[in-house]
Image (cartoon, rainbow, N blue to C red; front, side, top):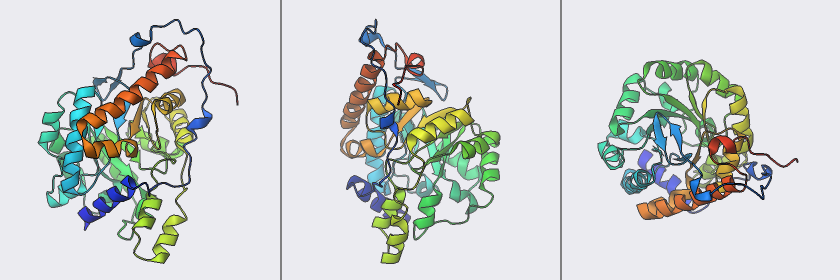
Length: 338
């Protein structure tokens, strides 16, 4: 049943039916154009450090998933592309692999394909109240030789999903146990409704050092669940929340202000390299993209490489036209008054 649900999610997102009415807020971030940049564009340094490794650009393949058979091809394409480009890869939920042994491309082969880039394991916070704990966390990490473990936070999706896990009591202390006990960092990630500064600070205070805001403006999991609802009532409940959440731009700014020392991943409706530049300027260290590259990931590694090549070219132009020789300079690039 879980595999079927993942396949349904994939079909809905690929069909463009998982969008809500929210906007990311990134369009409001407008750079001052620098007509005399005094730079050679080809020498702009887009590289940065992430999870102890040097990556070619501040880009992350955010978690995406599907039933095991389809996920295997997607994960292989993503891993091959990430290794070629020098970019990190966050896998989709490993719940199926951990519970049923259906690897879906989430085995040691993934690390063999991508030996030189950060890999991030992943399962849902709700599973910490249904039997998952330190043992499952270690297995998830070891399964792919991961550099970090994502614990994804999806209370809205669970609330409107017919099969959803609704008991979220005590999860902060369980996340703390993982954050303080695992040999790799724990990443707390929303899935499209955004992290607030207040929640981010609570996570930081219990030892979570990497925060993925995953704000509103991209895929709406309420809209996705409305598409697969079993009754008109369930669909109506889910559809009411299709625009729910903290816009990505606001979430990035809030989380950076609340947790100035954290590694902040900006994701949620990132369309192109200009959005990446905007997210970096607002305080993101790395910027994630999922649904925007899902179609390419279903086709081939070459399609993913081409997609990210375009994004990196766009980011480089944004740096050039703001007079930013590197990401540190971009973070202080002048913005237009609103």
